[in-house]
Image (cartoon, rainbow, N blue to C red):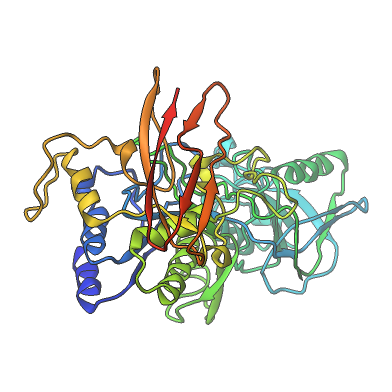
Length: 455
């Protein structure tokens, strides 16, 4: 990884996109991506990295260094609707990108009722490899539950057992998040609540039936964006005074180029070859931010990497397309530990007005407080307080009493004469005061500092 980043730096690139995370948060001295990105910052290169897919557990995100743009994943307003019609006429909305035209009624069975005798009861509904009894599954649609095993692997197991199709039901942890996969037989995915409805229907009749309606693309779906359940969350356990992730971007059901050297499911038993595939993950979200950063660099070639990050963060949206605050897959309000500054809005970032700038020297001084020293940099005599790093977001851990930190903004707006008013909506039980509350700029590049008092 370090060698690849060193080559990119040597090639003089402007942006590096890294869709790679770690299994757990790593201290900076052990984090090769953080160290490589630090050297990229020295050359004013923007580095965008995925936050990871360990959510919704807290404190799981990767790539938390403040010189990295850490990207979470959220949905877009495009869905691929493939309803399930039950034998009693009930239509339940599902989603799929699987291109099979099976449009007839089949007997419906819950995987737990068709499990082989040697399968543990606690995973009997998960359609794990060799877990289904072909005699009970043949020519039936099977309800499988997310949890253990891969989603595409569940479909492969239903196909092995002779099933006609399958319904992938979310577990409670997955909530309403629906990720589409290139299954090997007719399939659709449903939310946790809808999976429960289907299960209850199976239990209500002696001869449950169902059909999977062929998929159609639906645009302008609401609400969107919604935070993905899988996206890794803060808080930042390496430095609790740096808020991460920084931003969220489209990362659910994203159509992207695909290597013809591998099948769309990556399963050896899948012989299909495709040029494009749908994928979900922060690895899909990260390139969106990197591409937006590249466009900003082209429009504003003199901007620093920190200025570009600031522009992207301060213009991000915290609202969905219904005008309400973004939610997560469980339907609860998304917190900054999931969405950071909000959902990427590239058009706004072209003219952010003000930016929070920082340089390699700022990051080198910050690293000194962690005992990491760049041989060519003289560490300051006083320890740097990380909450004072000129970052576009502010997080203060273990606030007890009153603390004052400083942020410095640089005018990059199109107007020479401009003024900005501050407005603060602090968390419940806290107060934040900014002085002065009005900043006046009379030239491009002018910098003004504002102390922020929190208690």
